[in-house]
Amino acid sequence: MRIVLLNQTFYPDVAATAQHMWDLARHLTQHGHHVTAITGNTIYGTTQRFDQSHEVIDGIEIRRVQQTAFGKRHLPGRLADFASFYVSATRELLRMPACDAIFALTSPPMIALAAQFARALRRSPAGHRIAFIHHLMDLYPDAAVATGVTSDSAIPTRIAARLTRHTLKHADDIIVLGRDMRDRIASGYRIDPHDPRVHVITPWADEHELSPIPRNDNPLLDQLGLRSTFNVVYSGNLGLAHDIHTMGDAIELMRSDPAVAWIFIGSGKGMHKLRARAADRNWSHVRFLPYQPREQLAQSLNIADVHLMSQSHAFTGIVVPSKLMGVMAVGRPSIMIGPREAEVSRILTEHNAGIVIDIGDAHGLMRAIYRLQQNRTLSLQLGDNARAAFIAHHSASVCCDRIRQIIEHAVHRQSQ
Image 1 (spheres, rainbow, N blue to C red):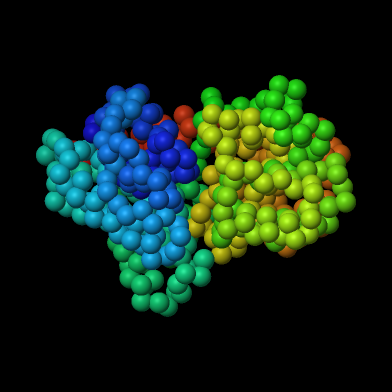
Image 2: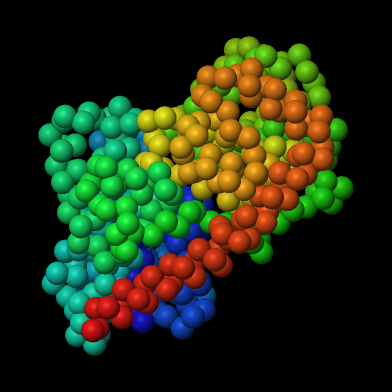
């Protein structure tokens, strides 16, 4: 089959959706399919452009279309980046060789409309209707409302909601990241949660790249001077969808304990706010590190004795933090600060792979950290449970194979 992946980011970009689509593309290629990625020609959120507009890597065709490159400096610039990608991606879909399926994500928002428009005008190589699979990595306009960019009653919000409802109604298959997202599209977009088109597939991590590393075999602990401390790690984007205040308050409560180190790896507005608070309060036991390259991610995740997860109430069902799967892959326990109905909370509870703390309960977070520090048997058991659940349900091979079958079945239905 000829399968098109439609997303604003792709390999070698380090954005989460770029890495996920690279994993999926390789999996599909290994099963004999021809994969073309239509993506932007800039590194996500920056003004830096890729050198090549068209190349083939590991048998995967990458078509990087033109777009503006304002990055994340201001909202009008981001909207211009989105709009220019819509136009270029749609044009590319209309002029490239015919395909059997278009697999569209949600970066930028509403890009699935380009997939719908293209399949209305084109046919597959065999003359059948092109299959359209919509993978919801986040949900718009819900995310914009949750961040305060717009309101429920605003005219652009209502228009965007109608477009999302239209896209979901006409997709051959819909992939959501969690049961909370499935429930949200059911209540907000009139999609029956039992509709056979709806599939729950969580984000994933590569089980071969990420695995437990014994402390004695991890040189990064020595490089960072973290060999003798109990390390509480947050790894990934810390932005508007996450609660930072509970973490900050717990850090303040534990500031006099040199045996516990807090390490924040990544970026985001929340990270910048915590860094400013750390400087203001002189938190000597807190470290901030940049994103780690994918080839060093295993060592980076393994420096933790426990990982932190976070999600605000407003974003329940809108996003599902993909960082959990990397943490589970390396066999580390997690502490989730957020709603108990969120998918991350459900996974940790069902598999006994971590602890869930309510937002605002800084003392509860402190107690959970000390509990794991003082009970090594418990910590190891939670980590082992996490790794076992990851291998069974959330590894790249398991999730990508489920998606492959969904695409193949969707194409098969169009040929009947």
